Image (tube, rainbow, N blue to C red):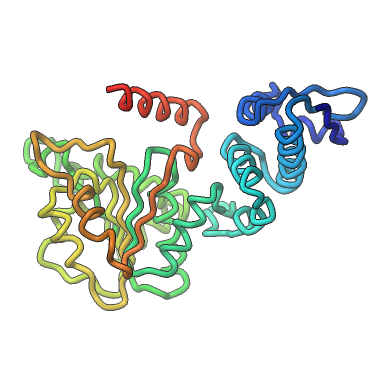
Length: 315
């Protein structure tokens, strides 16, 4: 079947990119062929797939009016078109999670990210498991900063296990801050983008913000705080239980990790693996599983993740 869509030249560039990079993604996803002819986009393929492709192109044109179109947006449009839910895209694209220090709005870019953000809003404890590049940490930090600005919490606490050094950091050069900073740098990077380096430093100086290794959480009760445990796949089962039992009044906990990237030595059980199993039937806990479809980094990151998934299945 041949389906045509009216398409101005500037719309074509906005939707498919300078080198037609997204047209190839649409063709591969929907098994169609796209070509331009006399101011229109011609879509060749099976009738149902050609209709879906036309719907996707129209949706991408609308998205391109207000923001750049990237592979993540293209994959999301295809996913929703297949399920007959393109009408829900507006909510995803317009849901502003936070605003960066430079005034750029942070929005959900996939259906999984929207589900994740909504879960954080509704639950005191959210566990997000998924591959690299799905926005687990960044969105959690964005939600934490927003909660602080809205006075929903009084402080932010961001923590990670320093597993690469077995949480025995004495052999590293420098004072304690210099020893642990390399393990916490991704959290600083997200905060700098969202609040600016000066604001981040002021919050640290005033005690409103704390960024520390997981070992520093032992024996504390964390009340009226937004607490993020990042790289949770590298916690032991004992560390995870310790962290979970720090939850105090008026606090919100978010745990993020990638179950496929466990760096624990020997045969130690990942605290994230165990928590996902132990808490799977607890209604007060929200467990969000992000997938390769939620990857919003470079397109090659998605291909790498998919290649590793195929390799693991063969094994």
